[in-house]
Length: 345
Image (cartoon, rainbow, N blue to C red; front, side, top):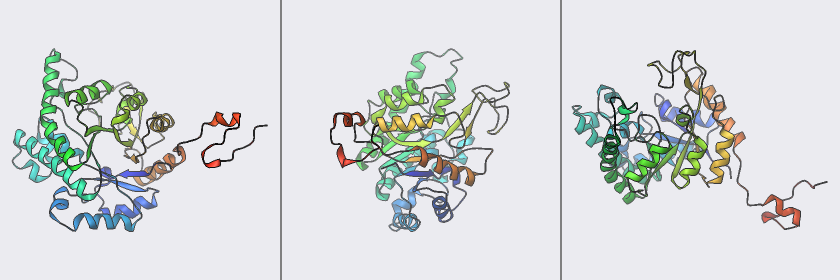
């Protein structure tokens, strides 16, 4: 069977789920990947209110939608980050409290542990998210930065996330990091280093998103083959690069998304430079049968138009796998299912 096409609700959190669910169905989606903000999925309500998860499931079922993953990117970001005023707008008040940096990090870690517990209660086995990073600011390596500095950053990541992942193990839930600039892993090399730092914890893997790799010129198909056993979920998001005015480089120039000067920008699925045909083939090669979850971002386009065309684009492109060796027919071997093709003349 082709993979389900789902919509990540993070960019739609301004809409109540009761409005978004029928809209998503009308746009062509099979399900939703619920964000843990807005009113889409409340971690603490799921743990404290016996009827909460049943009501969420009932709402989705009413509109013929499934959910196999929830996402808590915003709180995850605060687990390892140097905390500043920007984090106040992305974490719940009970995580922020007075804003003391180490307190925020510790409370964020507890909230991610609770997210694993809430996911199990809701009946999903994947939580997508971010990790944050204590060393992202050193990306350009000046002042001069040695490997010992970066080693300490990966050690900090491991010390904070190993206890979290142990809770995921207890709950039989996987954590899928979206490999992304500002996270501990942002390309193939750092993803491998993150896995090594965690001693390859069985509950740590990746939410694959080619858009964050493409404009960095990281081989996003190679990523799938490299981490074939750690692809727990897949975001479908497009990006283009090399389309700016020459005034802004890959670092973004402190410009806003949609600025015509930008070297790269996110695009509606199928309208950028990502080769989704190659991705679909590679996902089949590694045996990934999970959802293709559209994370829709395109500053220039109406989002309903864009999300609708994205679902249709992926549905045309995806295809069921084969249990038939096509060339065995030349030897007259009967194929599984007895499928009939066009005779060769």
